[in-house]
Length: 481
Length: 126
Image 1: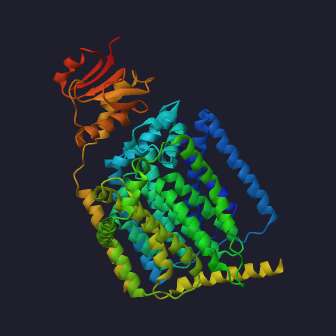
Image 2: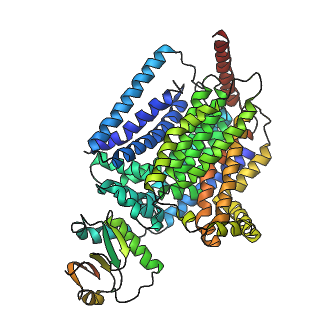
Image 3: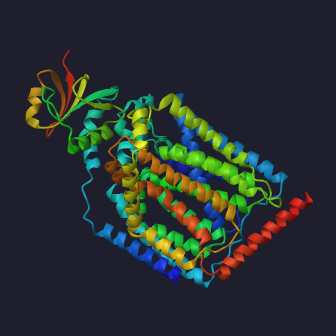
């Protein structure tokens, strides 16, 4: 069964790649292919974990699971082949542009930093191969229940300390890998943790590069590698890192949707899928799912100009639907109620909502945590943004506005969770605030780098020109059709 | 200049945390130790969905401190999918406490497995 472990990663990669290819056909250049592959593996893990849960809940054997995964991948592959033979590919984004001198320096520095971070990460993983506290009590524990127990639905009977209402993307992905391997092996969880951590950083850098911000991409990558808490949380197999990855993917796809006018609805569907997947990772993802829906509904007003192609917001919700149905089913039929709501009465909620001292206390602690966040990483980023200034570039301003709104609403949502928490406020803030900030951190860096930029390097200009040329071709194709 | 500033900050921060990680003394992997300690119980608890967990004989009230709670979670992690509950209501009891208290436990429970150092698996007498 040792060879089976390779299938545990290859099948999600192929499945995710096929689903992504239905919208994003043939990426040009090695960096764009890398970005697509990272997103594909993440999406594939989400889809296969959902399938594992569904088949597990009707007690099918592992062989049925393997068969189903392969059948679905083949079916989507055929659909892709059939559709690509019918229509011309218009979704490639950029040709690979060799980084210019300025960005090349940062590019190589980022490479060195990656090697350094990998060595530190490796030591951390060796020390805590089973993950840290939360990973043991929640995610890896749940994976054991799923893998070891024939009647694993009684995992939901475990005490509230293990949060049995939490969604199952991470435990199901790990348990699924063990099914392929035939036995439990915590190297799998370390590999998964490495993928989520470095996948987030690489996606951030690569996305900025292909959107024409080469220098910003390298800087963003370095900044994330230099955020100690992010790397440590990642190595400790906490779910906040994959969740931050999922948020980032949604924003990247929203930007790509604006850039690719002709396949905007496809990219929005993909953004919707990732948004739904966020809810399948952790409960905070459900809040994000809500704020993203509001952001999309609200933001579609930005696309009402006559000269713009339409903004098919329905595509976003269609993409979100499969994971949303799964999530509703999970919450309604299997998971117990969330402990934050069980402990709370309506009167208690109203009292807390009208208690001004709580707002003051939360604001103070938020400010202190933001100031010290990442050993000053946030302050450094703000300083950088102030120095370079707002680019005034209106290239992506609508997707930027939508993303900004979503991020701000999510941040406000987190704030209100603390206002309403039945736990001791100081304790709850102390235990969880930094982890919540980590969830938003990669997306925040991405949005800052998209609008605050230093002088446009030659490499950036070339990338942008190619993007513009691509768009011109597409607009002329659209006019012809 | 701004780019250099940010890159410098990121490099410094990255080097600092990696240095800190490499400098820190390696800690004992408690989870791995517990896996070994509890592994003989797995055979007996294979078909048991619920079991009790005690650190003191059931006659004495136990205040669940952080240390006890941590031990309990490690035991639960090792013995999943059997669900452990604090208390002696279940037929099977995992005892992880003072070795001298094991004799007291034996009055109403049968000792099925004794792993030493106060770790034992008990079953209620019929």
